[in-house]
Length: 122
Length: 107
Image (cartoon, rainbow over all chains, first blue to last red; front, side, top):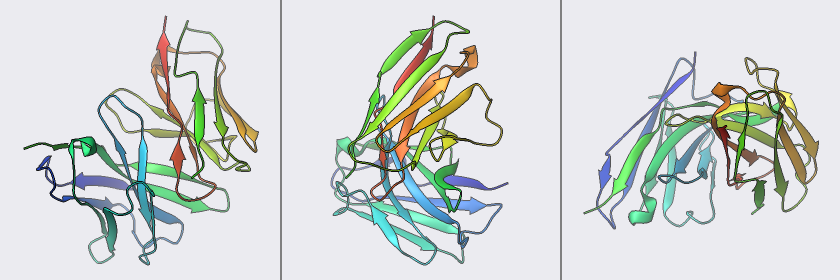
């Protein structure tokens, strides 16, 4: 059974870079029917899609974050990562990684990590 | 980017009630829409994909309908365990966009 686990610092200083890694287990990140995504949720608010990556390295980003976001993949480690630069308090959120199933039958976020709270504060 | 407008933002209903949540896209998205359930403190879970396909393991009281710009999630008989916030997500194109969410409470 595919599982995802986020890891990274829970506290980031303002203006610095938030870095998170998602480790995929129970399946290959090099699947042709999967994209790998990051979604965040500020405390008490709704879900916001950050971006997706395919194992080949193709990326798709939320235009509102595009200038600050980089998503990368390491197939040798079965991991993908998120970097968000120049963070402010508005970037405080629970960050989820997830597998985006993409096939003839449909597209949807199928498996999710448990989420990790990242607080931006000095 | 495609805007997804979800309504209502919250509702309160009794066990056994029929509950309907709607999502409207700012442009046509065929049937490229999913519905997700998020229980308090948990990650979201896919309920419905391709507007009307029930994800394996999801109770049959959940159903989805719609195409183009207007979509509906229906819970035919609300159960106590359905306490959650529900989100739509368009996957017609990137950037993917979520609706604002509907918080479902049990009376």
